[in-house]
Image (cartoon, rainbow, N blue to C red; front, side):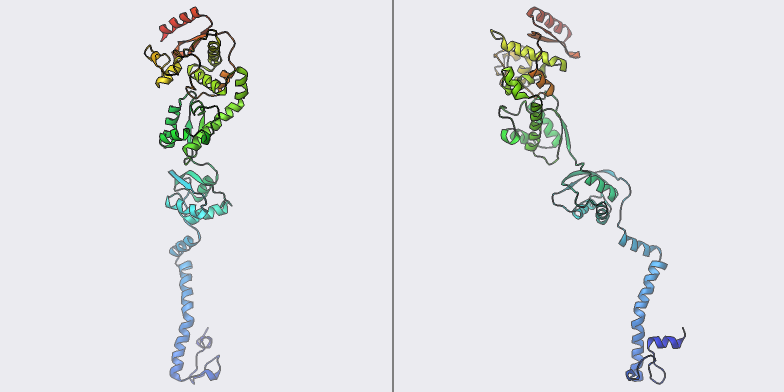
Length: 383
């Protein structure tokens, strides 16, 4: 394009003061014309120069222009599964954006936008559930989304073994859930709140042994309720109340018998036989005392398979060497096998049993007293 063509496009004036490409009426003095010519050219060139600079940044400026544009369009994101461990809590009512802020602040994802983009792309923006989750630092946003919407919340896994006494159960719960033991003891007092059956004197015997998954924010009442619910399932499975009635006992008595069976038995196979010994002693005329070392140990808060002469002097109602009949309540928390044994005792006429080989859990049974003393001597040799 020559100078004349450029002058025409810009509306330049000729030497006689006439504007090319414009009407003559718009012509002014030479001084004014010179000022307008400079102003008009500058007004057109400013956006033109800005465009040239932008093109230079993107096309010719190369690397830095590319970084600027990339950051604006593609958010920062980590690669891979991440490392370490971070516990993240999703609170009730939080949006994906709220969670994204927490994730970035904890170093889980590189940017909020990366997470919100990933969860929106997965169509899971409304799938976040309240709870605590275990994630890792420096993980990709897509991986974080997968873990959070999978439903795998962080939980406390607690194992309660068969026969554990309530004091031990609460100590285990307190340790595993990081809650004060006093909270559990206090919660255990409210029978209605934790769902104890009407025949239960207290929680002892009904904190059912099992492996539990507790939410980290679960209260002591909620935890104990879950355990009692598990007992209720077991009781329903064994038809406890009806079966107890047929045996001539209350459900509470059956649970007391089951707890003694659990404490005395070395193996599952011995359980129905021990249950039979208890029933036979209770049924004898004249009545025979149960004489169970396990009940004495419970009264004294000790653990041993044999009570000493000093132990037998205990005046506790749990001392079945001193008092006739069943103790006041369960001496531990029996499992399902012990409950089934209490409801289905063997029928061999057994009145006595001795754990003759404690190390190998060998227990022998007999209906005769003279054989009992022989078994007792065998125990003395082996203990």
